[in-house]
Image 1 (tube, one colour):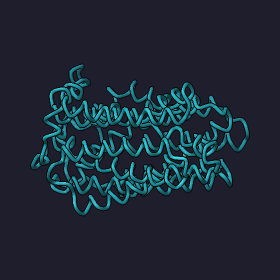
Image 2 (cartoon, helix red, strand yellow; image 1 turned 135 degrees about the horizontal axis):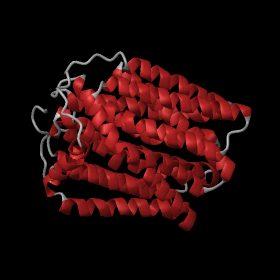
Image 3 (tube, helix red, strand yellow; image 1 turned 180 degrees about the vertical axis):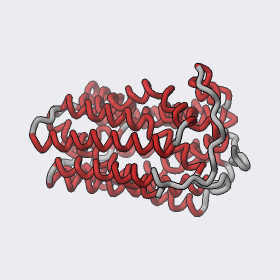
Image 4 (cartoon, helix red, strand yellow; image 1 turned 90 degrees about the vertical axis):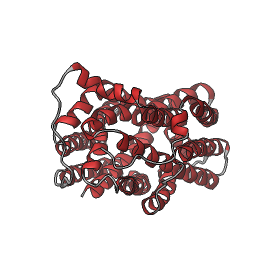
Length: 392
């Protein structure tokens, strides 16, 4: 049920992203407005980070996820109805994306912290890879389905998203908890900021989160895919769907490998190497004029990102006590998850100033610079050889 819920919710999010990106660009023709889509998802995540974490540590995580997915479904229904009636504007689209971003500020850390209560600590690395494979399978099918459905009817895309979000919520509400959450400490100002303090005191957790955050922040190529599909490769929504699905193809293939043969030695060096591969793939995508070479670069980008995600999530999960996971993962979602949205805004603004290709190229080069700096800044992470035994 947990795996299926991840699939449904992720498909809905990817379909919505394709539809919103194409619709915004059709309405405005502006790279800056594409960047705003990322910004309006980043703002609620920042505003709600200190609330989402303590809630996930104090209350039933299944119920929190269900409520968040119901809110996302409601926003999708507004997008569907507004498109059908013809009064949906770019500002209203951004408002609904803001609401979805606010709901995801609660959903993302809650879903991440729920998994260690479903499986044992020994199975956690494989479970994370399997859970990630669910998301990546959705990242493949979601954009492709979204692109095809948008070509048929934009209303149909948003209506399908709402149904999928409702289905995900119903499934997650029925997930069985194998490992019970211990008693919660009372709410206080220290409770709210405990996640930040824990990360700051743990160099491996801080390094893993920081490395991924800056790499994603400087990436942001996916925000500009509508421009690549529309102007550079001159394809329709189907081309945009293929481009958005390509990273997930690589990620899914890698997640299957990792679920069967997880990385057990040299995890620190593997993390840095795969983030560097992410930067190189971004550079290749930026300068490519071939649709299929760009697709291949995005596949490699997705595969390398999957390795880094599994290593980072496993390190953070096993270094963090369960009673702290909600707050730590709320901060993790802020620094890593929302850096996707802020990275999209960065890419959109830079594309408006310098052009699309230079914006993506600078992001790839910046990722390589971050890797070199992080090796010196976080030596404990770079030299980490194994995951910690057992877990909390």
